[in-house]
Every structure is written in C-alpha cells, then in structure tokens.
Length: 220
Image 1 (tube, rainbow, N blue to C red):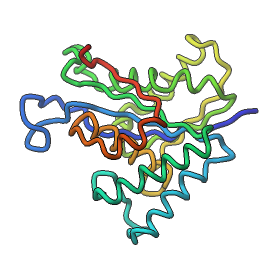
Image 2: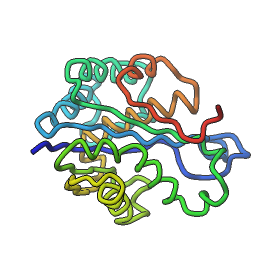
Image 3: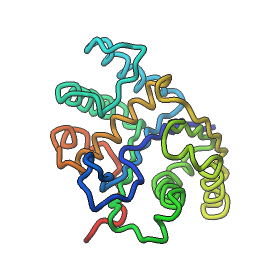
C-alpha cells in the first residue's frame, strides 16, 4: 500500500484592503498555498534539512524560524539545500498555487473558505489520488483553521465523487512550531509569495524547477 504525508502551509492573507499599500495598511495582493508531499518512508528528510539549518545558523531551537524572519543569506541557503534534496529524491514533491486576489469576484470574497478550499482542491486533489493512504498535515495556525472540518470534507467529497478514488484520507492539523516539515513548507510558500508579491527572484530561480506551480485568476 502506497502512503504519503502532505504538509500544507500558506503565505499571504485573505484580507481585501487592496486600495492601500501592502504592509502599510493594505492586504497582500496574492495568496500562496504550498504543499510538501513526502512518501512515508522519506518523511524525515525535509525535517533533517531544517534541523541542520537551525544548527548552521544557530537559530534558537525553541523559537520557530519562519520565512518572513529570515535574512537573504538564510533564504538562499534554504533554497539551495531544498533544491539539492529534491534533485536527489525526485519522489519528494513540492506543489503550489497562487491566486491574484484583485481578480477574485465580490461573491467569492464574502466567504474566505470558498476560495481557500477551491485552491486546495485544485492543488491537491489529483496528487491525493496517487496514493492509497494520505495523512494531510496543515498548519493549525493558518487560515484554514477557521473552516473547521470543511477542508477535510471538501477533499473527501472530491476524491469520492469527482475522482472515484479509493484514497484513505486522514487530516491531522499540527502547530508549525512543533513540526520542522511544516516549517519547510512555510519557507517554500514564502519563497513563492515573495516572487509574486515583491518580485524577489534570487531564491525563486534556484527552487522553481522543482515546484509544480499553479496560478489562479492571473491576467493573461
């Protein structure tokens, strides 16, 4: 039986103050959701990478290091080591989806769970069908917490009725402060978000070839 763990985190927000500058009274113009997909027998590999970064940069192991707090040197080394890991282990997989929020309709904006669950569906549903059993591990502090069990139910409905898949799905939200693999995913989401939100491309150029990128509501 094939099994995998899907770690999920996001970067950006679902606020709608788009008439003001981001980080100066305004909301982000994009939202990125990223997932790290690990076959169960390789689930410790990304965790070890993050543990080694903590040692290398002498980060406090009791304080979660997030992409938003990392300097350029730290970000570049993460991108390089992540690319090297994925090159050596192609069955480890990164996928992401980024939405251009300014093009989301007013109807969708009324319930943030709608757009979030829709993005998750586009990002993960096909990937889930590739395994007999999947453990979905989202960051318990992220936007999706507000949707309760609906994220799990949304994916289960898609698996059963849309894909006719027999995948057994278990969802186990986890605080990213206690999970180095979610921290890995946070860094990937932040790297992608920086590319779209801030046009910061040094790390993007390194890791981009190893990420399955999807975009939603971007202008043609």
